[in-house]
Length: 367
Image 1 (tube, rainbow, N blue to C red):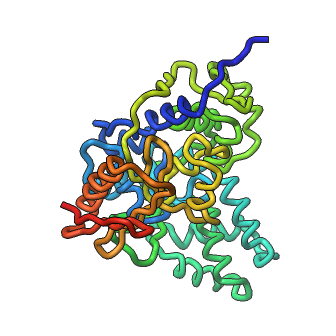
Image 2 (cartoon, rainbow, N blue to C red; image 1 turned 180 degrees about the vertical axis):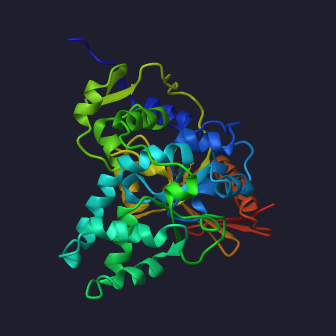
């Protein structure tokens, strides 16, 4: 029996950071970066902008906004049933793959409240209401209530979103823009149909290119899909490793590994960044105790990386960038974080900003 090579945490960490464009800011365009990352977490409107800014050498808010207005990138429910931004070219095959997740989530949340409702009929009725126009969830809900007046209205509105491939069109998804979420039929917005039977192997390969090497459970955690062990074991051309605990890790055969001694600069990651939630075993990015502080229920707090791993959490509010390290940091690292934080505030349009350390210890005024 051939023995698989063992990969330590430092190699896994540096390799993942390299593939995530976090060792050196990339010269890729915004569209190329979204493609590399497969899908960018978009539950918080501004988060994808910060996620791309921290990865790219030259990125402005207009770069992503123009992709959304130009229909090259779309925002909708995808991985794990949550909001993501992805290339239109990828949405048309990823969305059909994750329908099983959306259906399962809808049933768990609203199945009891919708007994007696034919969900296929609901989907077709909602499709008819959306044909040729954009509606908000309350508007879809109220139209569906004409057919099912006795059914919980919230369940109706959310069920329509789960059962139909819809995208949230701009100005939704534009930096700083709030308001009701618009719903538009994806096929109408994109001007093409979704792929009828995409292969799940395609999603696995894209994940490994962006996050690997990784285990079956890691891929399932990131995607929300299940029963992938047989799929991955049967995929030709995947290389196998194992980690220090003996867990089997898969990777693309031609994907290089980064050296354990590769320098990793400080970086700021936004709310819900997929790097933080892309693994079942997150030890390559943080300790178990840090995970409890970062991933709290359904919330994933914004973090900063120090020497490649999670060093603390941050928040930017009312012109004040608050940094909360998980451990005491050397003055040199605090200076690097302050400089990177100043660049973050400049990107966010904060003029005279202040950086505050919590618990209180020191603060500096951003240049």
